[in-house]
Image (cartoon, rainbow, N blue to C red; front, side, top):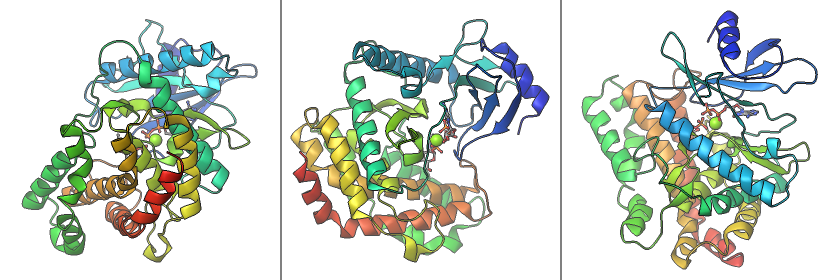
Amino acid sequence: MSSASDLVNIFRRFDAEGPYLAAYPFGTGHIHDTYRIETGEGYRDLLLQKLNNNIFHNIPGLQDNIYRVTSHIRKKLFLEGESDINRKCLTVIKTREGRTWLQDDNRDYWRMFFFIPDHHSYDVVQSKFQAYEGGKAIGRFQSLLSDMPGPRLYETIPFFHDIEKRLETFHSALRKDPASRVENVKDEINFVLAREEEMKTILKLGRQGKIPLRITHNDTKFNNILLDENDRALCLIDLDTVMPGYVHYDFGDSIRTVANTAAEDEEDLSLVAINVEMFESFTKGYMEQVRNVLNKTEADYLAYAPSFMTFIMGLRFLTDYISGDIYYKIHKPNHNILRARAQFRLVECFENQLDLMKSLISRYY
Ligand code: ADP
Ligand code: GN1
Ligand code: MG
């Protein structure tokens, strides 16, 4: 945690209006240190983040992506006559030198956005309407970015959803066993080994040229979709991993959180199940936006995306547990293995509902 005086000094280096009244830690993200900065009456609050540069090695490149993506979305919203654009798209606040990022004396990187006021953000979805609006937000994001000009976006984490690479890293962690934890997790390891080939389906379709690389968000868990006071979709946040990807990544990662009846790290596995109504509502909202964009193979394989994305998240949590908790923020000693177990239970649920998911998706394509 940064001290209050550090935060004031950082704040002053950004070109933000208004006095600094207070700062407090904000949100439940696993990656950055996030603070809400309160400013005075008549000024907008701000969102200040100390970025995790163990995970993201080229912050200027990452921030350049975010600036390009938000500028493009902002322009399209404006042309479509949208109101309230500052709540519907992140606004990057530059530093006084005109940069989209700042490096402090400790070599830590910081960035600032307008704080989006009066938003709702949910770790677990509570209504079909929220799920429908979430689907719309993800589909619209993909379609708004489908014509972004300029060079290919910088790949902020290479091979982010590449299952072959994730499996290689997992096997390497197994061999090294740096925290002597492998013997605690034999069942979870066997769960992975039994599914290695099948989970390469999306990657193989991409290699065969049957599904195109598009611009995707790549971290579409539900709390990265902000809703307004009436639970209508407002804005996608956490744009660090916006880069080329397959639509299955975004659809699958959203369904992983939208259709799960329990939290991502639920300890009582009997609570983990699929809420089919949430699945259908999200899918309806998503398909309304992308129906005319997706090719037939993309649509045909959407039903495989939830189990795939849930598997890859479980695999990453398990790998991090075996590696000694070096990647994700944890809030209790066994947090990563609890997360992995809850994700693997959810994979089984999705596997059992594959036919039902296929038939529901086909209603909207
Ligand atoms: P992490 O990568 O650590 O998840 P995020 O960029 O998702 O970081 O931000 C963490 C949390 O901060 C989000 O879950 C959300 O609650 C909140 N947040 C992020 N950006 C904004 C914003 N511009 N306005 C309001 N809240 C935000
Ligand atoms: C991380 O940044 P956050 O907390 O939204 C992770 C995602 C995982 C997610 C699991 C850059 O997301 O890939 O799905 O945790 N982001 C990164 O909750 O690794
Ligand atoms: Mg987040």
